[in-house]
Figure 1 (cartoon, protein in one colour):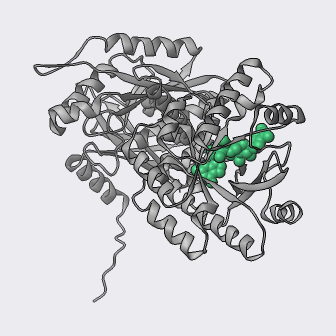
Figure 2: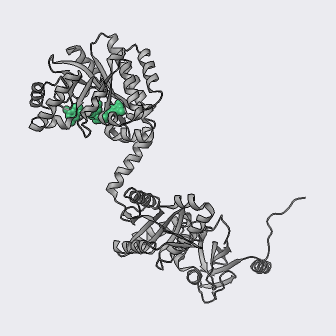
Length: 557
Ligand code: C2E
Ligand code: CA
Ligand code: CA
């Protein structure tokens, strides 16, 4: 037996089906003859008298909640202008009792006897999570609906050459509240908070729950920044008083972030990202303040974010390489060794200087992998140079304090030296003065162990803040590298005295002194006169590619 799935009813039968559907379900039906403005409306959701409406636009004007009118009208226009295949819209209806209902609208134009008829069906979807745009906890609109509204407001602002604003709100102390009061109770805090916040807004401003304890306000049209400042002040003023939730009182502290559209961007997702950035800035600045998004500051933020993502794959993509800067012995005028300097070329970012990416690698934990790579490449080079008969006293690598503190640092280093047959005394570990002075037993232990095993230790950037000469007595370091900032002004009497006293100490403790960043002949001469052992700097040579360094070695060593 075959079943006919397409049941064809005649018009009278259809009317009966309509009537039944209207009685049974929470729906509305409307037909609009677009050619003679005849309307047929049967609707049970709103309770309004809709019979005065002569067309769908008038119908929407009566039924749609004020805050959603623009969006609802836009959806209709988009369909009538052929931008969408169906007429599709979601909006809120404020019914007579003041209660808000969510409706979903679908419609399509049919040609009936030469006339164009728009058939519209309206469903009450309140409580239906798939369709509606509301956040069940706070009863505010949710993120998805908010984005639709935002996109619409951006379009309108652009069309009318106006501006709008977004205020992103993050409760600073929310985590602490959850920890103290538990999840369920803090849900009540969110409900009370959102109601209080919502009560501060004007007629056309809209508050949405973004996610968790994050909220966002849309100001679709503003006359000036002052209006945004006023609203943010009003919010801070209001939450100076504790928020009462049942019998408890809470001090709510808020970080706010503002973006202005279309000035900052006319892309909804980007605006949200910018808001989020501005809030992060507020948090960095000590919380409980409002930050306006600033493109310049954000560029550094996005660059940092890009560095973070690109750096993860820098090793596997072969983007890292090493340069070698010669160190010159002042007395013999010969290369005594090289400092290994890490370089990164990335196709999106170009050359990124180590001063920029190493702190990021450290904070993200990538420095261990990168540092190990540098160590192994350095030892490979040293192996090759030894095999080729080049003579050099030491090759120096910069080691980050994070690398140094790793339990496996020492065993890894010993294994690599063994693998590439490098005598420990030929490898110099450069650690900054700051790392050395961190009064941390771990550091002291590992540095002493390195010295015991025969590695050379150089103290880098000496003279940049700590200047605690006496603590140098604790270690048998081999080299002190005097920071460029001292070398830059070596002609000044003060720096000459400082330098001379370091030289005296060096002679007593038997370590070498290398001056960093020597750029002029004059600096070299003063340093030589003061008794400095070696120099490193552009005056003698910039950091070199491996082959160039080999050329140097061939010539000078
Ligand atoms: P640093 O260890 O103090 O390295 C010396 C820096 O001064 C290098 O910058 C070098 O190119 C630069 N320099 C040398 N001579 C002169 C000069 O005459 N004039 C001027 N203006 N600059 C000079 P670079 O290569 O940009 O490295 C910056 C810092 O990045 C290094 O400072 C070091 O702290 C860090 N770094 C570099 N490579 C590594 C590495 O492999 N691992 C770790 N952990 N840090 C590294
Ligand atoms: Ca160094
Ligand atoms: Ca240095």
